[in-house]
Image (cartoon, rainbow, N blue to C red; front, side):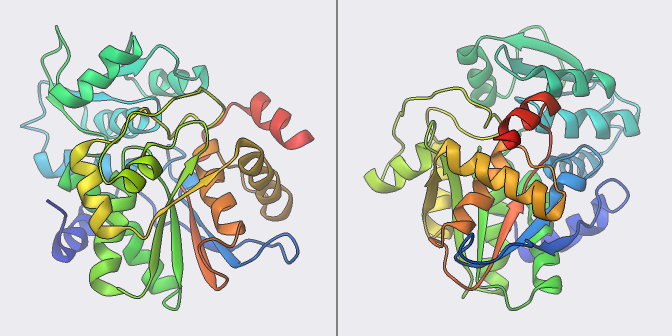
Length: 315
């Protein structure tokens, strides 16, 4: 099930007091550095530094404070957790976050600053939380990070803004984590602008969507932790793969070096801080594999440890 255009329009009104309409800016770089006219959709400027606030806000506001009085629960490596915690604080309800024990400290500290309670879990238990939509000992309403039409509808509001700000865009490149961002945006574009090419962006150290698209079914792939911590897993949810098959034109896999170079370029030319996932989308757009025309890279977030960012961009 995908959100309809009317549901995305309704989501835009619903999240207006929580999420920002973000800027769309041209990446200030020229050939030979880039093979396309690349634009950056700066979701890194959201109150939590990530697009995740859009989906979290839509799902939670739609449910309403009365239904959420017992608190909310989500599973997240960092950004969805911050979105849920931010909205929970605004709604004066409790938020519990199940995070993998490999989650970056920068994101965990941000969750706690927003009032969220963090439960660190082994990777297998954390992933199971996505599947069961529950966690032992926690009684709360589960907000899924990606496999939820309301979350995807919130994310789809990005597409409405893109079509208003750059109606002649030719392609969009979207970081693929769980798939809620890509499928939310694609659901709108396929209805409003079917000529636009839509690509996922993945990193070489964990690219399950590319493997699944090649095989025609979800595949388990090797996973290597890296500074790209906002995307990448061992497998794609079957429900999200089915959506991706219908909506996307492919997955563009980039190297860690390409992601770091894109991070440095955006900082040097536009003074923008990108986290690893966002840098993958920019790197894929820069590669020319999404086309040579007007290509929008969804700069999905900027939540990266500043010491790590300095290390990656200093070379």
